[in-house]
Length: 271
Ligand SMILES: NC(=O)c1ccc[n+]([C@@H]2O[C@H](COP(=O)([O-])OP(=O)(O)OC[C@H]3O[C@@H](n4cnc5c(N)ncnc54)[C@H](OP(=O)(O)O)[C@@H]3O)[C@@H](O)[C@H]2O)c1
Image 1 (tube, helix red, strand yellow):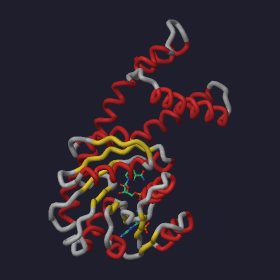
Image 2 (tube, rainbow, N blue to C red; image 1 turned 30 degrees about the horizontal axis):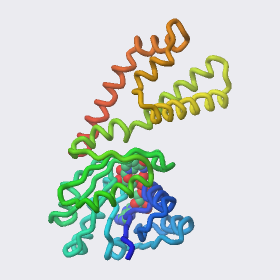
Image 3 (cartoon, rainbow, N blue to C red; image 1 turned 60 degrees about the vertical axis):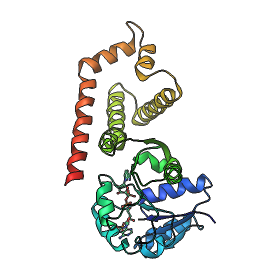
Image 4 (cartoon, rainbow, N blue to C red; image 1 turned 90 degrees about the horizontal axis):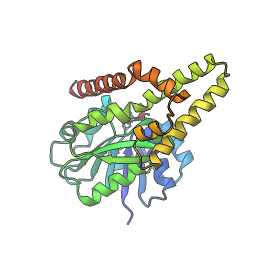
């Protein structure tokens, strides 16, 4: 019999994960629960093999994996009614909610030992190019570890962490990271227009360059510093631009920005 995966919350992230699993031709039976019928209808319209439920308890009956894909602020409200269902049935719990600790999820689900994986995905998951940091508690078996990984790999790359607290750093780097690159793209497009290029010309030049640089760096065995030095000839145009960026303090700005994001992640987790 195929394993059953139930998503609670039929929003953006659940849709991205379901789309990835279906594209990967996963043999999991996919269920989705959400009180909002419009959200369910949109999913059923796209993927008619998915089973939709308006009741969370009914959706998790017999499930092997439950993916908690609701907003962090309603996680407690969503978990507590499931306590009775999870007394004698202990599926793998996968939470993708930002800043909600394993200790809280466990407490809200009844307090007994249970396998929980906490993940921090990012928005490029919506186009199957995500980056997800994952942490598993001690109750997670090898098979469940693989199941969580294959679910998140359906929307991009994964990185397992040895310590739950590292998810704050992951939040600062890859969770919030797409926005840093968007800011750089925005700034480069504005600067390109000041050089006389049109908005459309600037957009294509900047976005394709960002994509190409990321692809080259991912496919290369060399680190980013080596790649940068290789395209920087003495006295050339790249050197002139990099000198301005480095003397303007860009590396230190990134250090401070990531530290601010990590601090904020810790504050939100503790609030
Ligand atoms: N989007 C990202 O890139 C991203 C990145 C990292 C982490 N995350 C995390 O992923 C989680 C989901 O994010 P999202 O962007 O997919 O949010 P979303 O689009 O708001 O999806 C959440 C869904 O849960 C539904 N819901 C509300 N109450 C519910 C209940 N009691 N039972 C079942 N479902 C319920 C919501 O319905 P209504 O719309 O009717 O309220 C909505 O359809 C969040 O915790 C977020 O922190 C997201």
